[in-house]
Image (cartoon, rainbow, N blue to C red; front, top):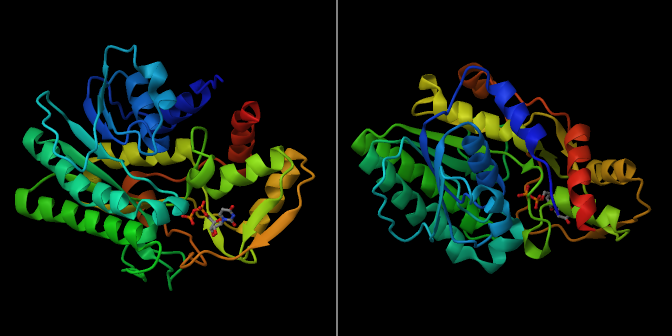
Length: 336
Ligand code: UDP
């Protein structure tokens, strides 16, 4: 199956304006994953040299297949929670390696803890050695089930460390603490992104990897029942991949973002039930809704306060949900 990513790459480029990554040397951990592979592809397309590190835990070879022939792209198959000597110079390190689907939390809790704790430390060591800028892709999950919505970066979180999501939430919180420790002790140039639910082509939709948007679209296109968890009144705020990658690149490139922790997400909140209905309408599906128990500690609301992103990064999401869902449907259709 071929998917033409030109439209997405051009959108990111246009939105970035003057910011350029030409001739930059960038290391991306998790570079074969959903967000990591978009990052690698955009950077290569922009004239950067990219070292992609991935162990294919949840990343996939097909995501980077087209990049393999490019002489500015280097791939290292490696688990970043184990030490990695990198001798070639690096200007930026993006630590993006981690499983991220709640279904994986139950199956791979130790791997998830390692990628976001030891993995962060090893990626930080690479940045330290080369005096590179460090970007950690943290998550809205550090807020747990928030009492304050829209949630600002100053909110300290409401997380259950021993619940099903604890391996992810606490590991990301620990990862953030590592980043700040390296900044304090070694004066590293660091930036932390708290990523809110993001979707787009290349996000996994199979088995335990599937997040709600690709699952609902897949179910709708194949006429299977749409599996709503709980009564569907829980909310999320979904960001399309071009907006997310633009936000991460702005965070990396702008001097004012040094040392900052910034939410990158959409402010438009939608219930899971509304999402299911929207997907049915957009696909013209005859699928029925089925209701299943709400997973443990599933946050009831999630919506970022993006004041900081607007002010420091001059960033705000631009792709409306209907448009992004349309692009997802186009991408998923040939799979079915
Ligand atoms: N969800 C659902 N049906 C599914 C998969 C997920 O209703 O088949 C719900 C899930 O309970 C959560 C929301 O959709 O409230 C978003 O889930 P996802 O796994 O995409 O990510 P999360 O935001 O929970 O990390």
